[in-house]
Image 1: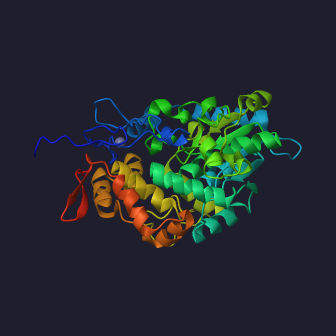
Image 2: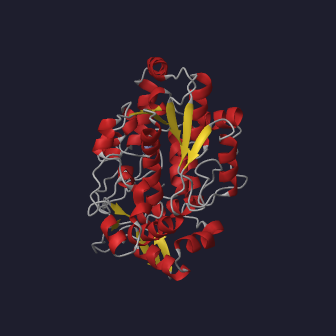
Image 3: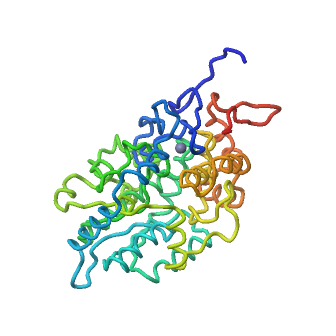
Amino acid sequence: MSNEVLEVKYGLPKEVVYCKRCVLSNQNPNSTRELSYSPDSKKESTWVDGDGICDACKYADMKEQYINWEERKKMLQELCDKHRSKDGSYDCIVPGSGGKDSRFVSHLLKYKYGMNPLTVTWPPNMYTDIGRENFESWVRDHDNISLKPNQATHRLLTRFAFEKLVHPFQPFIIGQKLIAPKIAIKYKIPLIFYGETLTEYGVRMKDDINLRPSMPLHYYCGEHDFDNIFLGGVSVRELIEKHGVDRRDLNQYLPITPDEVKAFPLEYHFIGYYYKYHPHDVYYYAVNETRFKPNPERTEGTYSKYASLDDRIDGFHYYTAFIKFGLGRATFDAALEARNKIITREEAVSLVRKFDGEFPKRYFKDVLEYMGISEERFWQVIDNARSPHMWKKENGQWKLRHQVS
Ligand SMILES: [Zn+2]
């Protein structure tokens, strides 16, 4: 090997290290980045200390050893007792799309804890058939408000997010994060329940809001400063003044203001804080109690059939992560299953080697058409996004310099 210094993009660690327990690497950026409006917010690795075990795996140990789950269940009972409505009005909000996690949370609250949740949905950019079917069967059990944003604006933001951040999902994620508090304030429902713990998906433990029962204010609250709020990597001011976006079409992407929060304080809670969350338990609960259907075919880029199925863009969310961080959809699925002892680390490694980075071609044309870009432009953005410390070109083919073993 030569001593050439390879450029490192996105502030990632120079050296690639894999967790000894699962298959994540230290190139996994902190997901709080995705919750941020700023295009250049700091990107930190999921773990920094030197014992070679990622935070998600440490949290899995913690769940087994240190948390008193009986006590936590009692806390949930008390919380529900405090808020349960007596006159048929809604007493809590469960955001989601009808995937296995939101179904688990809404069903548990309604049918085991006697709550009356209103479900709220920020719909996928483009539903898949299975995503629509699951949504329809979910709302057979619950009232639901779906708020689909202006699609001309949303498509434009998605294109900017892809071209400028190589993150086509960012406008969706921002809207999804804000829909629950916005509806909560509108309908005067002060309690919001989320499901899964972010740490299990590799978010750094110190940032994981699930480790506290409630959500810090800065996740959803802020002033409407149009020079410092960026959507798809473009400031709101520029979107309006340079790109002709109608101010009225941006409401759903702007944070709740401090005044609104003061006037109507919200409580956020995570079922994962109160309930020992195991991906298989949640899956079987969703299938058996709520008619959830897995994908009839294997999802491209991975081996699983039950996670993240609703949106035709989903595969591109994972594919761009694979290009930027060397971690694809199979890595995230196999890491989760390895740390939850559903598969061994060896099996996880071979699944990653087999499926990670597989191109999601099924909906490629739909996604190009949605963003209004050519195939050539797509590959130009993708190839520019490859960090030289991670990728090399061999005989005209891009190859990762490192692979999990
Ligand atoms: Zn790990």
